[in-house]
Image (cartoon, rainbow over all chains, first blue to last red; front, side, top):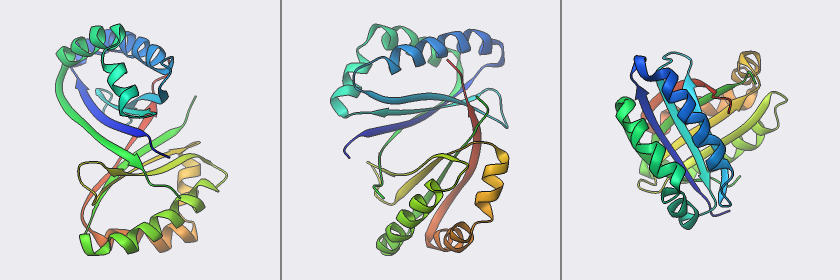
Amino acid sequence: MIMLKLIASNHIKKDQLEKFTVLAKELIMKSRAEEGNLSYSINVSLDDPCLFTFVEVWRDQKAFDIHNRTPHFTDIFPQIQAMSDKATPPTFYTELDA
Amino acid sequence: MIMLKLIASNHIKKDQLEKFTVLAKELIMKSRAEEGNLSYSINVSLDDPCLFTFVEVWRDQKAFDIHNRTPHFTDIFPQIQAMSDKATPPTFYTELDA
């Protein structure tokens, strides 16, 4: 099954956690509603409550490109980057078929 | 929803890729069949065909502990570690509810 999986992490400044959580939830809901999204999760580390890892699955590259041009992404992503004291750029994957 | 998500990566030695893929597929199938597993994927990087990231979702810590004692895990995991020239230990997460 051809699909595109993205894993990226942001380490959020402690004083920005509350604001980040509000934006993150909006990004999750609006991204999951996109036609080409297969799954979208933002995951908080159990060892570090400021570390968040995005695991996103898109139907294909085109769906991901569309996502990158959506109002919610173009509005929220820069804010999240500004709230981060460390951002691990995305690694792109495809899933091993079993 | 309380659940446990694990993300870990292994960089497999080039000459072990074929053997790894066989073991990986067995581990995927048997792990997904476990009662406490919610999802289990092994993902190959589009930029580096030797880089594999495991994204596992378990119902709770107990389900994960049971997994760690299964014959398929105790048999396959050491082999995968031996095939790796780099292993990034797991980070444990829970999912942000939206």
